[in-house]
Amino acid sequence: MRALLRFSILSSALLSACLLSSSIARAQVVAPAATTATHGYDFLTMTTSEGAKGLSFILFAPAFQGKTDVPLETINMIGTEKYKERLRQNAQLINEQLSALTVAGWELASVYPTATLNNGRCYLFRKAKN
Image (cartoon, rainbow, N blue to C red; front, side):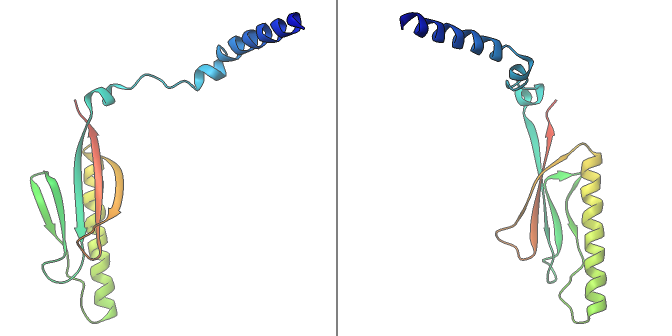
């Protein structure tokens, strides 16, 4: 019985050693952190708001290309065609700013609704520090 127990322990240890040294097991091991993790990231937030006069804008924190804000068209109006046209214009301007950010090397990390603005969104971008 003891011999069987020793055989069982030895065989399981040998099997474990073989399995843990296999290429499949090594592929599942977490690789060392990349250099971006050691240097960290810079973050930029782009906040959009579409609404009444004075409440339609894009804000950048920190400033992007020297701009801290960009006005958007006011969209609270009567008339379906004008409303749709202004929504389309705002969407185009927001898309242009998003594109400019990615061309400048910013990576979109998250999008979430604002807690304080109606029809508002925050776009969180990150860029690896040098």
